[in-house]
Image 1 (cartoon, rainbow, N blue to C red):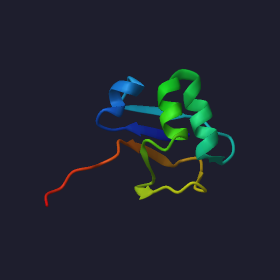
Image 2 (cartoon, rainbow, N blue to C red):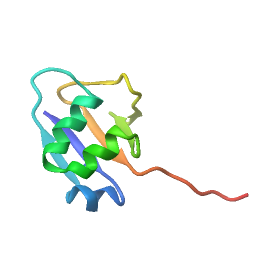
Image 3 (cartoon, rainbow, N blue to C red):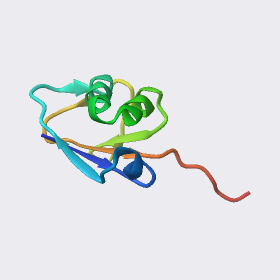
Amino acid sequence: MITLKYFASLKSIAEKEEDHLDIENPITLDQLSDIISKTTPKMGEMIREKKVLISINQEMASVDTVIHDGDEVAFLPPFSGGAK
């Protein structure tokens, strides 16, 4: 089972703060976006279009990151701001 965590504005898009997903084999981010799209199409689309930041076990994920049973996947909105 993997744990999915949604932060900030993504909580309202996903309509939840946390979810759990049973996986039998390791999956890619593309496969995860397909699974999420079945219940939350907008969230799946945002993942595919790289409009969210994704961390796996508190490490920023890359395109080729593989998700394993027991992992924690966090979805974060893009950050901006700062002072000049």
